[in-house]
Length: 243
Ligand SMILES: [Mg+2]
Picture (cartoon, rainbow, N blue to C red):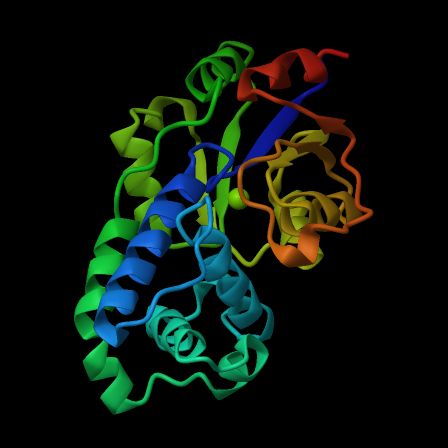
């Protein structure tokens, strides 16, 4: 096998962040419903789709993208529950003092729930051990907090399989910079997001592996991007590298 370095996304690739977000988002909806005494339309998912529609709309227009401040989600949910058109509510959303105060407890509770430790996705432990045995160095790339990512690697006892962790905005320029600093002939990127993990890496010459997870943001639903490979479990990676 030619000398290879594997880069892997963290959230929803190594671990199931989506389930943690889903539980926190539904919890936030319940808390806001209680606060404003109005309920979201009944849904079999407990209101998750209702919250996610609002979440995706905010993320699409916010400069911090999916990392926008939690209070915006709380206030926009409240406005939509009060009958405002969702599109308009997102445009009007603001974390003004009164609203921030009103929903402070719900937002704190939401952020506490988001700190729950997500479970590992299928085959991650085994797949990383296989890569280690085959001397394929693994670097974790996250757009989230470096400290949080490092803490989760530690919590899942994965440190011995990981040679580095970087927090970067994953665009083609960032992948090109990684390429310049890597000695290996073949660089591989695995992840669950077609835009950041596949398209941007592919444009920088990486071999790409798509590992679909439970979270597909609205802007990726009609994507025409295709990866070089697609896997259902993380421990399918090594055999792909031997082809
Ligand atoms: Mg991800």
